[in-house]
Amino acid sequence: MSKLTKTDINKKAMIKALEKCMGIASTACKMVGICRTSHYEWIIEDEQYRKDVESVQDMVIDFAESSLHRQIEEGNPTSTIFYLKTKGKKRGFVEKTEIEHSGAIESTVTTFALPENSRDE
Image 1 (spheres, rainbow, N blue to C red):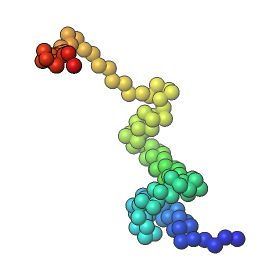
Image 2: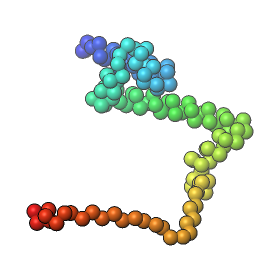
Image 3: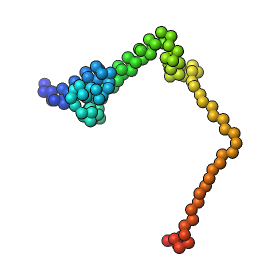
Image 4: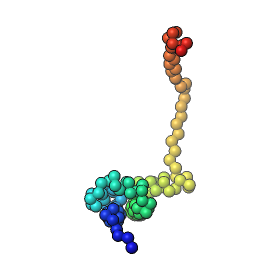
């Protein structure tokens, strides 16, 4: 059995801190006493750490989604509209913008001529 390094201990502490502070990296880093650079380097270099961080991010999304559903149940029209615009697209709940243009499009073309003596080079 291998001995845990200080980095291993800090990584485990970071995952717990991320869970406590809803995935806010700066806050979690302060809680653990590491710099943000270390956290982001670990994400790049350590596949398991990256998966653990992604799992925390998914947990935070689940929490936010639960809150959204609660607001919909309470009759919040903004939450209902947001949900339908994002999750109800396949049923036609899509906001479209139509742009109508009438008239000519003006454009300006600027040309530059080289001096006579530089054309032969």
